[in-house]
Amino acid sequence: MNQGRALITGGAGFLGSHLADALLAEGWNVVIVDSLLTGRRSNLAHLENEARLEFLEQDICQPFDVGKVDFVFHFASPASPEDYHAHGIETLQAGSIGTFHALEIARKYNAKYLVASTSECYGDPLEHPQKETYWGHVNPVGPRSVYDEVKRFTEAVTVAYRRYHNVDVRIARIFNTYGPRMQIRDGRVVPNFMRQALTGEDLTIYGDGSQTRSFCYVSDEIDGFLRLARSDEHMPVNIGNPNEFTILQCAQHVLKLTGSASRIRHEALPQDDPKQRRPDITKARELLGWEPKIGLETGLRLSLDYFKNAVAHESTVR
Ligand SMILES: NC(=O)c1ccc[n+]([C@@H]2O[C@H](COP(=O)([O-])OP(=O)(O)OC[C@H]3O[C@@H](n4cnc5c(N)ncnc54)[C@H](O)[C@@H]3O)[C@@H](O)[C@H]2O)c1
View 1 (cartoon, rainbow, N blue to C red):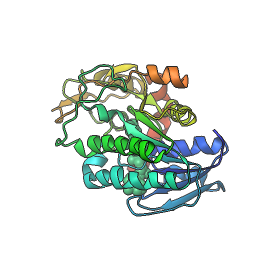
View 2 (view 1 turned 90 degrees about the horizontal axis):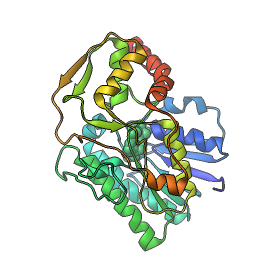
View 3 (view 1 turned 45 degrees about the vertical axis):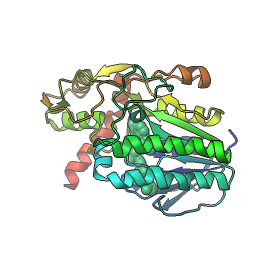
View 4 (view 1 turned 180 degrees about the vertical axis):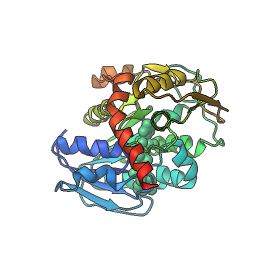
């Protein structure tokens, strides 16, 4: 991939900020457009003196133009269940209007394009593990539909821009990713368990904890994005860790790592909570030579200092 100028929408978020680090390390100039709806400037604080980074506070649902770019990475969208429930309409807008705007920039400047899609496109899957060819099992009017359905729409707009306007697109179907810079109160499994374990609260498990998830450490995920960006694959590619754990096993790993005396508390399972989710990554393996390297125990260990600091900071600012 020739280094040039890359736009990252949502670059002040968890994944976007790690992507910015990786692109800068490869020699790119990076412009970030972010409304700070769910992201934070502090995710970019370490890049304060980086001359090759520009930041524009801007809602991508409003028209915008950052000048010539060579690559558009479209990541702007509330992503955690807490966030997309709190900002349902904004989530629908970012994935629809915002996606049109991001694709129009790619079209205008003849830039390559990669969008952050999601395993949520598979809904509560009837096929396991999920291959890219599976069309999904999604409730279009359920509480999660503001996210699931707009991400499916995002994919539809993206392939349409390829078919009708010949934009050079890529679609990453991202499975649960974790690591430093996640918000500690975003409702996702790893930050929830880490925060609860580090503050001595009970770890909350919804249902009996037998539902499974696969967790990918952030550096593996970013490596997958960069490989996909360099490829010529225009249809969706699963990027996630196929090692499957029950939620209960994940809680036990966190308790062991933190040495916490917290206990596990079970609560009712939310509506439409997927019972299992695991990527089939054959396509990424064969096409991109990619597979994750970091297992759950190592990834949790690599994240521990960040979560300790985040919890300490939260308790001092209150
Ligand atoms: N983290 C995961 O496990 C995961 C899994 C699947 C898909 N994804 C996708 O990856 C992308 C990034 O997720 P994340 O985990 O980094 O979430 P995040 O909330 O940390 O980052 C999203 C960023 O987008 C910004 N944003 C939201 N709406 C915007 C708008 N209208 N205009 C400008 N900026 C806006 C937010 O302020 C935030 O900085 C999202 O598209 C998400 O759907 C993430």
